[in-house]
Image 1 (cartoon, rainbow, N blue to C red):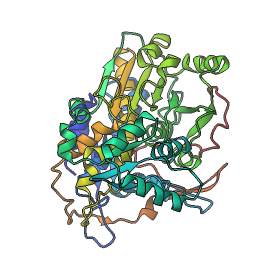
Image 2 (image 1 turned 90 degrees about the vertical axis):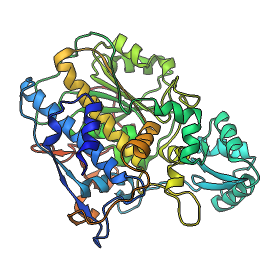
Image 3 (image 1 turned 90 degrees about the horizontal axis):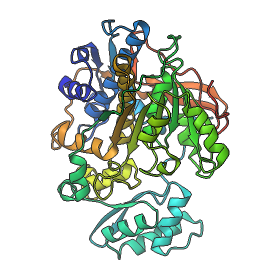
Image 4 (image 1 turned 135 degrees about the vertical axis):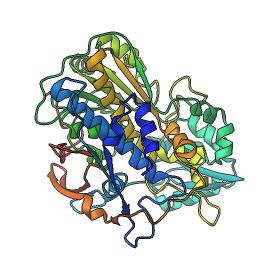
Length: 478
């Protein structure tokens, strides 16, 4: 493990430069010993190791400071096991619910040949599927195989960039596949490249809300409002829940979420439904905010602003809060796409990753995991924990901002040479994901799931509660 990669990452989080030496690596090889885990042309294994390493280090530091309140308290050693990391980075693929494999990508979420290029679509949610088909003029008869053939025929006669803009204008999701050079020259790619990988700000001089005395877990008493969906944001809050935080996920009753995604990322959390457009829903949210320590948002940039949920407004109503914002493309004011919705697969396609990872037939490819999502999720959790630790000495409402597209830029241009391949021969035990899978009973059924890769000496060994049914909990703090 190249310590420089994650030591720089720790520095970006504002961490003590002496702490990275507390991290130890347990490397793993493929079962046949031919190479490392998460093999790819881009340094995905290093991305995974580095993001988990700084997250675990931030957790260990948070526990040390919580236990003593002293900056001089020893920070526990951190272990980064390639096996645990690789398994967790594809946790959604390993999940089983009473033996059933979860649904992942929908039939219309894929690459398509167009007139002169390739297009990537995302239609996992019913409303995105409907908007895509409407733009293409394809009636939805419910027959996925026939629909795929009809969509392919339409797209073969249209330019990818034209479809990209038309689908976005209709509220759907599609991006043209670009080369790394094309993305670097694109106004959005150039704008993202100028962003810091981890944006961290102090918003004011408000005193930090008091935390309860340490409990059996370092985050006991920490109250986290989780307004995120899909993978990256929920991975961050799942990690905070591992540490004992009371994480309350809030969803709209009018915006369905994948129950399988909820099962994978809902460990340690509670889940409630609130209609923020209603008077009662807003009142309930304000009561929750009044006692929250952390608010994590991951909706399309600006979507929550009409409810007064921008970072500045949140800090104005809850002084000392830590706000963590996640976006796909960089957020409002960052290039022409900053406010657009997006997902890991779309960022891979637009940024040139799909071309770099393409197959021998010349078609686009994918990373061995939704690595932008998972990696950004662990970085987001690390940023929250570092903000909370810094608050102990200096107070202040805090803001952390991350973007999938900026993580993609880090992977392509800063973490390692894009032309390099993962090298075999790093000493380590053969990798078997079964070693990092566990089974847990839950209201959803018997779950087989990945264990958390965030580990340090004396740290939690697992979540205190399994995921429950989406929306089954009351919108109140425990």
